[in-house]
Length: 364
Image (cartoon, rainbow, N blue to C red; front, side, top):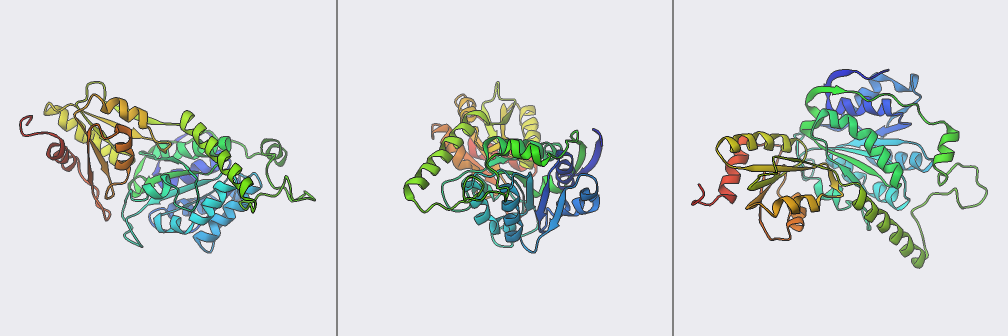
């Protein structure tokens, strides 16, 4: 396998990138709109070429606990699901974070709450960025806007997860998972040998230790004083991630009088709305957070400082807007425009919302 350009869905790109990254194991369960991840892996049969384990578990709960076991042994393991399925995984994700284990979780969001709809949404923002499970923990959350980024973020997600020994999540909406684009697949990596895993992951459980430590991985600590120290260590790791790993892209912000903030597929629609606005003489810029956690507070604050107002555009009732308001310190007017239930807005809807919410009658 070598670098090549292919036309594929975002979900398919996830699967191909996982094979090329040298992932040791995938454990998942089908649910729309992400089922093609598992289907593509099954069709490609990487167990015959790279030795990658691909297993359809009996449930999402089973799959995340298989990830927990694989991660505890130092393996590069992942799962994928959609919103209700990821809800079922929350306990296991919390265990992974508390055990300081690297793993990759892919969530291709659908509309909710409940079973909701199979159509796209971005309403899992809180679940992903605020720690959907119990306890004080964070995930590194990457938000792709293209099929190319779906492929690229597999390697990035694993690299960050192993660097900081914490789970990472690719949080995509159903549009990005289902749409087809050209993608350059990454160069293949060889799967690590057992010797390399032992060298790179000395914390991993090997099954060969006679005593409990250091080769038993657990999230349980009955001594409150030690558990507090564990939590303090987690928080130091999170502060380091916040310092080093913020990622975002800025578009047309140099002269912007108004700012839009959007992620995933919605950011692409906003770019067309911005193009239309500038044709009308309205100077609008966009910041697209790539890491939803850690969030680009400083970048948004810097641009917003010179703007008349901010419009946050999401496929939800208003979730990321809370972080944007924290970034601006409520010094600027921050408004929200969102569609729910699987409805995706068009550029004219977004531009009309900007005019309605932020542009005064005098300016019009």
